[in-house]
Amino acid sequence: MNKIISGNHIVKSFGQGDERHNVLSGVTVEIKEGEFVAVMGPSGSGKSTLMFALSGMDSVDSGNVLFDGMNLSTVGEKELSDIRRTKMGFVFQQPTMLKNLNILDNIILPSMRDNRKNVAKISEKARALMNRVGIERLENRDITKVSGGQLQRAGICRALMNNPKIIFGDEPTGALNSKSAQEIMDIFSEVNADGTAIMIVTHDAKVAARTERIMFMRDGKIVSELKLPKFVGADIDGRVEEITAKMREIGI
Image (cartoon, rainbow, N blue to C red; front, side):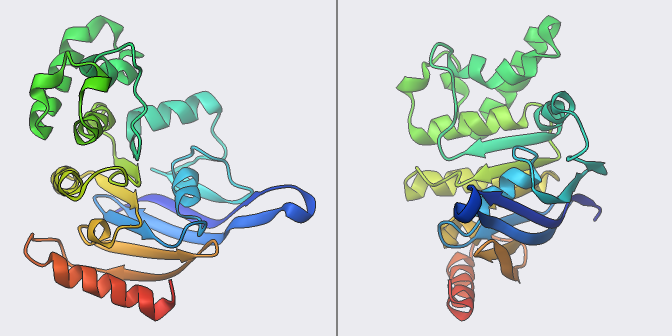
């Protein structure tokens, strides 16, 4: 598989003067097309900062990030915004939806920028995605009138609207109960099986167990990795134990 993202010796610091500290300390990482990757580690280890750096949502102090052959540090802000909008998808712990729009309109909104004359086609695609994730009856529902799991499914639909090469998920199941979290991971697995790369930041070993490569972070560095075979549905407990054993081994 070809590399879709390559982060090379990434350094990212926050604070000023004596208060300045590295959140990422020379991280080098690659993600290939179609990979399903998780990032784990204690709070403050740099997990989300790494995701923001690799997606171009945050600049880096030194090093570089190559996405699909483009150096994200050298492109302008408009081009960078277009790359994120058309080639990446984002799913966060708390979906950012506009309260004055219904579920369908929130899903299609980011896709309207370049396709204002194709509202019917865009809406048709959104409805197909909603049907795929099981929220087809909610298109006219206010975002305050659905469950957290349903709202997260809508967020996944929105992330998929432009056929991204990769989806970034920052604790995408963190606010959900175990049943809803499992359902969201089922959807991610289906999306990944179609060829979309996925990178998830998570504290949850059950979530990470659904992926195929886990990067463990501590103090701004990737300290270890664990590769797993493709998840087939019946081996979750054994995979969780393998992950937790690895975490004990490396002290996180």
